[in-house]
Image 1 (tube, one colour):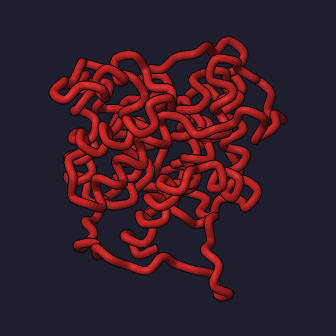
Image 2 (cartoon, helix red, strand yellow):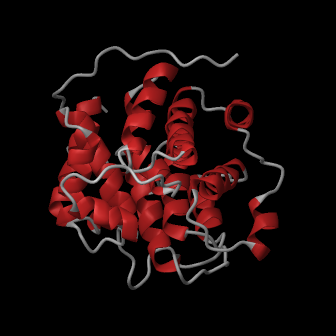
Length: 286
């Protein structure tokens, strides 16, 4: 039986890990895999390219709302802020990042509450939590807290819960068989089809119910980090969110993100988002 153990208290200040010659290793920064997947998928969100050999970074590639939201969740965790405040603060700064209409209205409001969303934003933005906690009770509690400020639909909360457990499990156990069984038993996901079988008829879908298991299938079928991203982004669905979630779980399992993917993604971030990304790694002590 798989058991998730609780971490001790995390330090509030740590020095970010560096390579021996003093250069920061961007390829090992937590969350860089998710951000890269978001950027690579950004140009395919409404213009699907069901081509495994697609160009990774092309003209128009950029970070989207998924990157802003997951960094807001990371920032909230580091600074002890509530998720709603951090999400509103950072998302207002990047108002043109591509938010859905309901979430955009929530961001602009001071007092708006949750609106029963089951969209995949709750899952992708929750992934930093999988780097912070290891106890199942803590993971579930924080996944719910991060989701329910907007996504209080049962499927929105379920998607966030599955995402944080996926990242934590793959970082700690690093076993695809255990991962598959845990996700099937805990969330009822159907992994009977491969991404190649899904791709021909797949269509754009922003729900957690579709995006989360599809991202996990791309990971289960993959042989490397890049292979996972290519499978996810070329699936023909909500490409940036699929890439973001697939990149998160692939980094958790495969570890270091390839240099030709990590460095361009890092370079596309503005300075303040880079600062959050690097600070999160230092805060974790990685």
